[in-house]
Image 1: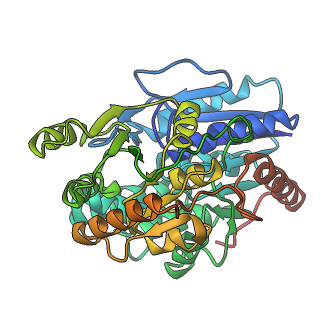
Image 2 (image 1 turned 30 degrees about the horizontal axis):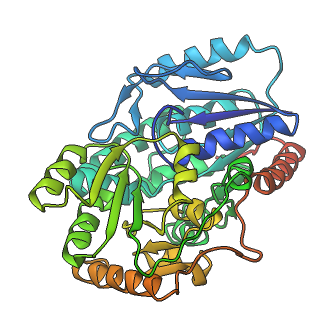
Length: 404
């Protein structure tokens, strides 16, 4: 079959959605299917086969999202490019949360095709973290107006709500997927959907199978901690660095991987806190190399709370045998508990206390290593096999028809 993805995130940008997109494409193609991706353009990018780029501008402050200057222009460009494909599209899969979500739904409707959607992002929380509540309402207003215009449906009563915007798109989908049980519950709570299939973002089988461990006695050696992700407010990396400093851990090094608007601030904090010898802000690392690096660490940390719809880095860490530190109990609840240290509260004091406990446990030989996770697995091969069955069911149903 020929699967058409729509994505806001160019694969050259950093994040779990981008990683998931590339992995899904890889394993669908390995299974013998064709995948084409309509994606927002980035100015610093590498040309990638199978990607059709739409005109876009980076959305500040993180640049992780993009602004489509004209949805009408993007739609016309997509129409032209897709009309030139040698193989007709069998199913559309929206892997986007904003502009490309509208385009994907509109294109599926226009071409009378079945539609599957993965809702990756908690837009309400994400935009509030970066633009405040008033800013998030303004974004909600814009997106709801664009969606109602493009999809030929009424503007919702609560036209400021980003949940309502997501509902506008989801109502056209044969099936909706979410990356975790806890985000699925949020989508139901806010009436975006009645129910969704849970499809975690996967981990590359090839990378996991190539990882080997050389666990050394940790009673006296230096320990290596890693924090990885986008360096933006909702990820709470500044708070985590504050907790690491407050914990004053002996013979523990911290490597921070990622890019974003907080990078300069973090580098300044490292100097101000006198952590130059123990903390390194390393910038971006290619995904495969990052996952392999997780396997060399004693701990991978994640400090966000209430934002992550899955929290990909900790899934990847456990998949390669490394235990994790988390703050969000909802994320902890979907991981093998034997491999997790959970901070009881998200504040700096409690995170610092938990980090001290982590070090004490590791030194005492209670490292919580994930050598055997039992039935728990997020290998992409098995997830893709499940998604292919969902595609087949959607194709059998045919395009969703709404009673307007």
